[in-house]
Amino acid sequence: MGIVNVTPDSFSDGGLFVDADAAAARCDALLREGAELLDIGGESTRPGAATPDVAEELRRVLPVLRHAVTLGVPVSVDTSQPEVMQAALDLGVDIVNDVRALQRPGALQVLAAHPAAGVCIMHMKGEPGVMQRAPHYDDVVLEVRQFLAARLALLQNAGIAAERVVLDPGIGFGKTMEHNLALLRRQAELLVLGRALLVGWSRKSTLGTITGRPAAERASASVAAALMAVERGAAVVRVHDVAATVDALKVWQACRP
Image (cartoon, rainbow, N blue to C red; front, side, top):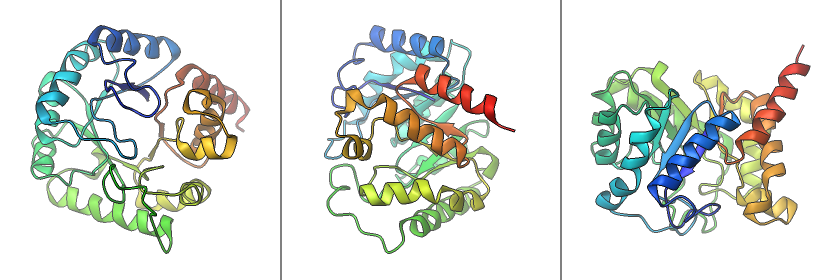
């Protein structure tokens, strides 16, 4: 899954693709690099980020989504706003990727009314503005699994078939480096929920802490983390550096028994 952030303040590529033409060109480039899905978002969810209003988020993403849905690959909209979900699905977007797991009023109803749409629900402790203020878990893997299981059950009760749902443990969302690494080491424990996993390690701060490199120089570390996530059962990896990740996965696939 190739990332297209149409934001001025994302932690890694904020401001690079705020222009609709630049964002459309980014979509095209990611497909040339081998992306199989595109994820387009208009809200930065980095620690401390401010939340744009609905009108601003729509202004950012709709022109890019109109282009992306013509490219012949599944398109995901990265949003928590029901109004943005509705507008995107009306354009023909395939997937809603919600870091808040459809918890905002009206979000469940939007997805329930679009039976062909996929949805990714993610675990996040708190909100982006405060999520990294000393997050605590007794057992992060258990608590993330319990949250995702509860949300999955709620979605099913709302009429959203389990087959439509992908789960994301939320690497870096209200979690310390130790929490993130535990989720990678014990990722198999999330597979017992019976749904595909989407994992996003790309350029995250944990990789910066480990390597000492700024976000723009974390491609190698990101590829390593993505490869380990896939080896541990992830079905989708959400990445900035598509070409490098695709190459690494081709080598891994060629060596599998």
